[in-house]
Figure 1 (cartoon, rainbow, N blue to C red):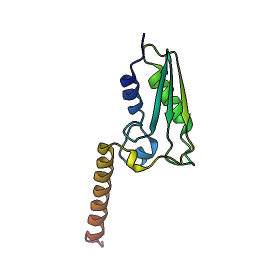
Figure 2: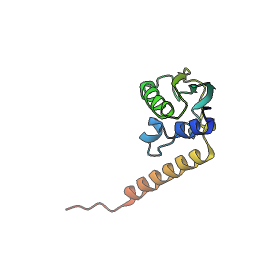
Figure 3: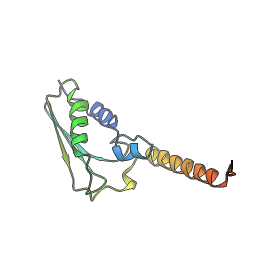
Length: 124
């Protein structure tokens, strides 16, 4: 059985980048531009992942999630996750849809802060 690369990519995009979740956008690894490469050799899949920072503490999370999502596919017998040093990734690698969602979230936060700063103070 041949492992379907598109299905691997879809599964990788189900893994939410924790940094994007922290700012309220819940972006997947592919959408964030974190997947550098996918190699499929027989039933083994190697995923090369870009980190957003050299100080990324989420590697164990990524390993568990990628092994679980990709390892559960038909035809996959093993998964290896490789990471870089966190120096290569930049926001330009994100999908247009991801950048748009981040901008919408940012605009909504700014609007909320501005509304809060102009709201009358209730002095009871």
